[in-house]
Length: 455
Image 1 (cartoon, rainbow, N blue to C red):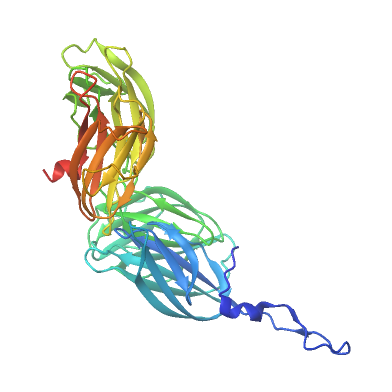
Image 2 (tube, rainbow, N blue to C red; image 1 turned 90 degrees about the horizontal axis):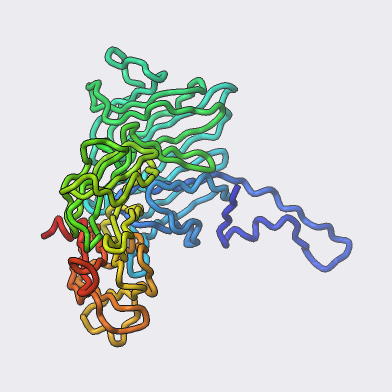
């Protein structure tokens, strides 16, 4: 287990200390340092990654949403805990603070909950005395950490149990924390309903709770897929995991990026009816929710379904993840293929997120500039030597107005752009560089996400 000792207390940890130069004097053995445990959880859905400090010393770095530090062992005492948000420009800003009198034989959890955008972001402190768990039992504690969801009922039952006439295991409002409940280890189903209702807004399906294990379960805002407003962040002593609603599935959108191909239909898993009908070059679908797991994608000409350009290409989809599927390449060169990559769709109130994809078949490797004006003569590229079928991933960008320019690698000759864009805080933006209509130059772009929504 990782041990964190602030610099001010370092001297108290030295095992043996000489009291002088006299050989007759015996070494003094310092008493053992009394210790306690502290854990930090990031459950602020629109907050950026954070650094955590105790008494001015950084103890955790780059803690992102839905992550838990695990229990850190520290000397008992007073701690001034501060949380610094990591901003897109590389600076940090203190956003939360709390004083903690950490005593021995206790476990403390500081949970960042709420939202930056509506100023509900705060630290919720949870304190529990350390104690053993009876053999064959497990221990569960529940935090309601979703500011947009009011009073709820929580049912923890055997899998498949009917809850229509059952009393809830507990009821909770935002910031409420249950007692630590000891129950028999085994398989359970966790369902959450609006207060007094029986229709679940969250259903975990079957989950296994291990014997002699402590679970701190936080109901946090769902930043993944599916219709449920919440997900469960399960914090263990030294790990964490996210449990999504059993119907969360995966979100998939399709982008037609083949400049010399006609409108197409897209079929999933060999179905006779297209999942996407008559998608033309440059067009993007909305996200479609698809069950997680293995699937095949077939793309055929809309005018003649016997003209198949992508035949049952395999894709594997993970629950909770969002994907863009781009048809790229060239029909004339018989080189059309699917390109699948993940999208990060969690909005962050302090930054814009931008994903740039190189889908231009004829462009070769490129440099991509993001500048305050269209003058790139002295500018360094934001991304350099980017090959075909490469995406930047989610870039954290300071909100503002920018110009996007794309050049062949190593040159200042603009092949795409200059393109004026405005990036707003909390916005999600996607740009795919593509060939011009019919193939080749002049090159162009496909705008996605909030670029489209804000038009």
